[in-house]
Image (cartoon, rainbow, N blue to C red):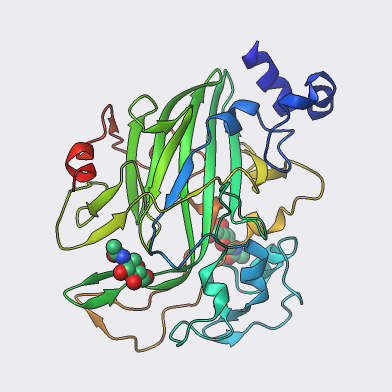
Length: 342
Ligand SMILES: *[C@@H]1O[C@H](CO)[C@@H](O)[C@H](O)[C@H]1NC(C)=O
Ligand SMILES: *[C@@H]1O[C@H](CO)[C@@H](O)[C@H](O)[C@H]1NC(C)=O
């Protein structure tokens, strides 16, 4: 039954809205075309207690940036840039376009907009949308739900008193793989890689897995504590390159999310509701400033680095729950006990 309803949800939103009782309507503001279980099982994100860089409104990023290629404003860019027209930049610069902050990245004091929106006690970012849920239906009941989180600013790690990897614009995500409406496994993005766990292994509130957002970097972890990520995808309790996470502020990314479906056959996104902007998802450029010219670097690591590209480049059409192979799906949360008593 739940499977049937979810099929209908993808195929016939109108029919669904007729048969679904009002009380069962999803919380996300425009979820009618995505299955209810994608919302029911959605992760909850613990933001770090001391992290000044909170989830951030997508349109706000466009309001505070200019489309540049090699540090020069691109000619013919739509003005103003909106989430509907952002993909127009693909014709004038494509992947070389950087949404470059008006104030620059190396600025003190930092403008308020770097700091995003602090969620309410209910976990809602009331004044903006810093999350997008993208549902990919592979048929036969196999559905991948991507939960994307956006932060205006990424503060890198400090190693031996030196700061590395600060950048404007930060995209992170979880992905939950469902089989006939039942969650199987979950992916946590961390820097260039991440970790996968069985759904059963994830720490949860009711049905909803927790993701712990690293202080400043927003890498997503399955457990609170210290995470050394010197070896990509391997989470060690200590080391030279450490992310910190704790139970600071709980963010419910479904509460104010844009929702979409993505068709891997046509590589097309569709909005969950007619007034949800789609163009930004097709944007091939970068969501932050380019790496400053002549930025000093030590062992190839610089303080300020280029901003990232968006959700379409995060392997939405995956074979496994990880974006690449080999994919190890851990059946337990390694280091959990060690960290929670630390
Ligand atoms: C978290 O980051 C902020 C600044 O970005 C810093 O002041 C604070 O000390 C950090 N906390 C931990 C535990 O690393
Ligand atoms: C623009 O970038 C996309 C993504 O990398 C690429 O597939 C496409 O071929 C590029 N278009 C042009 C005209 O270079």
